[in-house]
Length: 637
Image (cartoon, rainbow, N blue to C red; front, side, top):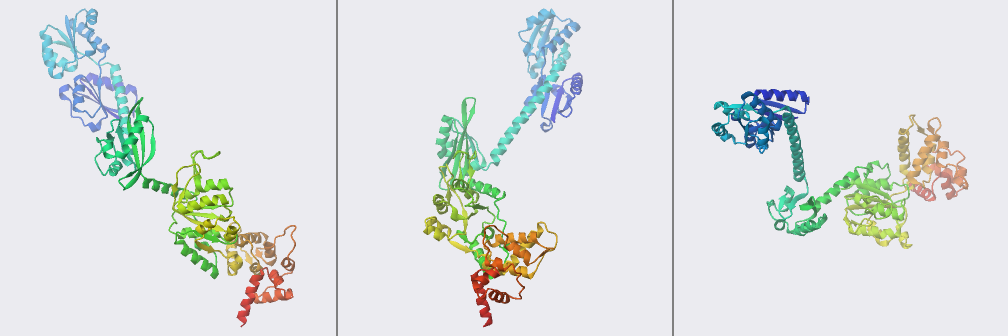
């Protein structure tokens, strides 16, 4: 709400002002206080209580000198107001000579007025208030028999027995002054808002900001600029004296009238800054240049913050080593080795058959490392064609190739900055791309497709494969130097066949997880079914076991998983496939055994001593059977 002080010289004018305010019906737009005061009795005004003051004549002149910080709107006297006062004066006093005081806008109109009112008229214009009384005395002495003017002039006229008429302000002038007061305050408020906004932007900016006029003098600065300039007082100083390395860029921007962006400068071996120059034009004239300087380390910090925000949008590792379900010694050893490797920053190569949980281990290593608060970026190198894989890994600039996104794109290596990138199935990276990947790993720098500059990165690489990379090197399908770069720390994930002690625990864990997804009844599994499960040769490892659990849950009978259900889950029917020995023999229901020893003896008897057939009958491979026989042999000694 706009607060307006309206000072009027006589009570009648106050009543007119109040009537006009009530008729305008603009409640809530402004608040007006109207006081009656002559020039010599203007009260003390608290400038904090009002946005604008409206006053007339000498009162307006005195207030504007006394309160320079408050806008003053002068209540003008219109020609119609003067005409009306002249008419009143002629009708009331029939003067022969009238003097008009305080209306400079009527000068050179005295002949016209004399013809209209048939008397001599002298237009004196503005008279300083300190000389007003003497002027009234002089008017009387020169033969004037009436004057018209403001309220103060009429008071002096009354003192010296001179006829007078007060020039009264009309309704239109009052309305106009109100409109002008509101408009003035709104303009001032907008200017104050802009000034405060620019002040706050300049003050709060983490960049150094300066405005240099066209003569090279610094006119505006902020605290960051002063800090870079060794806290030197800069306003009013020549740019060439404070920051001589910026002067060439300033001159280029002035004469070219164009922006110069991201010029790199080293300041006295203590910091490196990126400087940009933006010319300021008013019309067609360049008035100066705004210079922004950013500490390069600040840019890197901002990039890091952006990457952290990106990580919060999905680039997070959710698994830890506690998620690895196991009870076997071999997995204990593998996890302990992985935890030890996690504390290092060296590259890790995870090898293992498909479905052994390589990404779970990669995520767990990341979450156990000192990069755990950074992003975890996973990419399946076999899932993307060569050209797309390159743009995904390294990114590209705007217009780098047909179909590229406007503005370019940050690559996965950049997104993984201060974190971990997991390159799954690294053996499938095309040979031509392996060289570019090697350079990134060696230099810790990435160059976007179509760009001419490199971007520094800090990324820990974990690669994974289910193939023998040395064989691929020998056959010319994988670079030997890349293998040495990624194969610094190696983790071997054992297959499920090597984790016999974990099969039952994993099955029950997955069974409970599947039940949580939609089975409310309690499920049971009999011992014969579990025996079949343990004898199975898991070529697909844990991924295959997940499928077996799901099949068994669907095929269950009366909420029970028995050997028939398990056999169906383990050996789903297929077409054009020759039945194996174990599938034929397992049509017969395998009896329940109290121990592995009993099961093995039964299988050897059933297969007439053929250990390969015995292993097939038990659903295990020959190597596993051999290990079990050796174990039994040791126990019997």
